[in-house]
Length: 392
Image 1 (cartoon, rainbow, N blue to C red):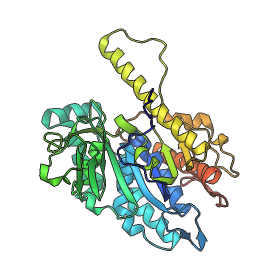
Image 2: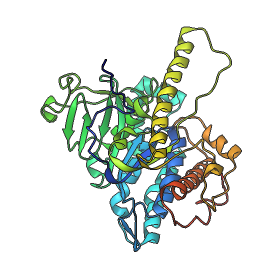
Image 3: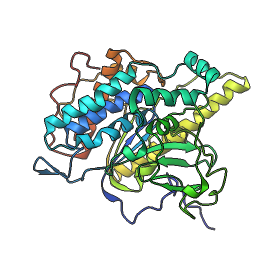
Image 4: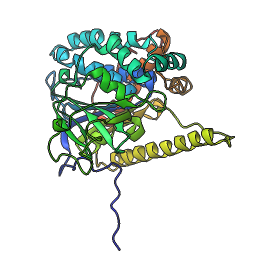
């Protein structure tokens, strides 16, 4: 009897004979909570030299340089901010790099996080005067990305912004080089706006979705799809939050890179002693349970690959305990305090300065612990948090 071959990720892109040398970085969804947590992660990676070349200040890195950033939802907001600033970060001097990173990425994202993109009431109003998704895209364009397009992203590393195609049930990937769904086909060198693309990646259903795109059928590379390269799949793709399909953004890097760094700031699954009997709330609970199981499966497969040395790298979570990391000189992050940060709602609502800085500090600290524990030996520990007064 034949057995179906099961895989933790779909075979959208055939795996190479061996994963490529270099680092694939995954930034999960999770609203502003994730955006700020990942900002701290990027801050520490910049300090450690992971934004540079293989030769970091005379020291060769055995794991190569950052080659891909794969993001979802809230992670896509900060990833896109980094992407459009990347070419201005290409400097050899570390102090100058950090100064530019602070000015071009940290400060704009912090300012953005101090404003509400969407709330229940503003969403209702936006739905009356336009659509919620159009409202979100307008805010992204006005407050953070301007009129930048996918062609303003760097050639390397490749930034991949993920959404879910509600028509095909597959992942829709946006990058500088292509926009594609393995079933629908590929558009080379797309010119979609960053605001629109991030809007699709963060279009959490049902409130913020769907995000509708309009293309011509002749924009697609001939015969690049598998069964669905025809209208309306090609001409009117209907997308939602990338987290519906893969909340860690793992699929675009798992088969492709030897070293994987995954920063997970997604929400936790909350147990419920009482479950409502009405159809609507029970259905919502069932969907959350299904979603939790899918995310747990991806996490288990990733952890297994790391433990069995099939991949090199690290997985760390906003819900993790820094005491479980074996490196020395970790920053002080009491679990009861970091759990409070992990339990902040998944939303696009303004965060006060203290909350912002604690989330950034927490991402910075656990990234540091993860990298120094599991990825690379001999790296100097941090002297303090980015924002020492707030801690976590």
